[in-house]
Image 1: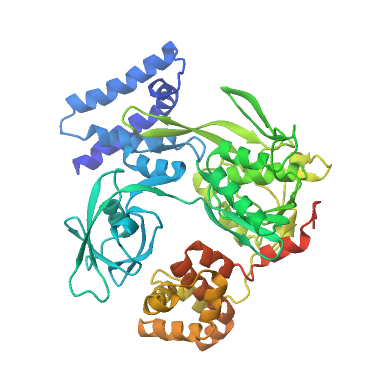
Image 2: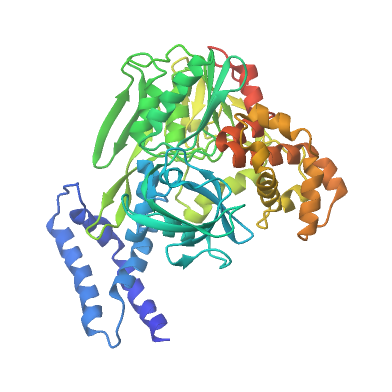
Length: 538
């Protein structure tokens, strides 16, 4: 009871000093020298004084660190939605995502029937060197039993990950072996892919799906372009759908590959950050390659910079649906306890001069539910339902009208594909994962037959002999989901594609998943129809 009372007393006091910490915290930041005036010192001292007084004089024992940790997000709550505090315990994960690697054993696993099963051993990784195989069941990590314990995936990952060069012992069960096997593995550097897939969609169209903009993305992207060039690529589609952004300089380097010298890519400007222009240097290798960029409502930040720079320079087509609308730049500043403040320091403006940041003055809840509101208003299905502020009208290099204030509007709008939708389709994809469990079970039963398959075309030929949709429906029925014959008929083609794509992921990773999933992708097909050296606006 007294803890609740304490929180009720302390938090308002600390929150009332929101500007205090917001102004004073910079003096604590690593790698950033920030001037501190007398007023900031006094405010900072007041906050320290209050916390120290609570710590030493309050009637009951309290966890002052927890009070600070709970208060900081509240302090930041009145700022923009993208200024956030990152606790020290989360910093390793956050840094791994940006740096593009982590210390681990090098396996992809899936928890099936409460057993950790190796889906894919990472080629060249520590587990391959130790002799692990696809299909092995991991029952223990060091002294921790991970089978039959209903242990969540994050916990299992935390047991297997660790500092590079440290050792971990895995106990595995392998089909055909009577006794469990012990594998001692030295953790190594495991790459995190930021380019999901790169392949030839047809004889002349190269396709690259970029998941995020991390430290390794430029190198992955250039390697993908070189591979596709060797396969006969004459035009390119860059898929940034569901790409939430990442590191700004990486996106700039990638955009530079497609622009002639002296073209503005973007500029940034903030209260304490003078305007800085970023221009192409003319050294890009793919300045003449016909280009299309795919975006949707989940494309944000660096993805929008990429799309906006291509659109405003009239360099290629933007196809899909209106992007998220994040036009703010953050700097991540390290604090003394290894936590961090990701602070918005500037806005970015694409070449036409527009900011694509959507409004956030009505609170974070409305800001993040904006996507849901777009859905309700019919924006995903009808371009006419999208309304831009006429006062935020801008011109591209070629004189076309574009708008600021709410994301990047594509040159060619493609509505969301609802063909084949049914309640049954929703049910098999719910948290019980009937569909995904079935595909894993199928692959596990046919592991020997699929282990020598080299590409998705070979896999599709192999899978054509099975009635996968009805097999999946029988599997789900045995697990408790009643067969819905009408739903199965209505969603047959979609289900068939999803099942084959998931099996493709189990067998060939993303090189098997996306080429199968995207065979009949409406947005890609529209992009190819419209693709050329000029912009084809609808």
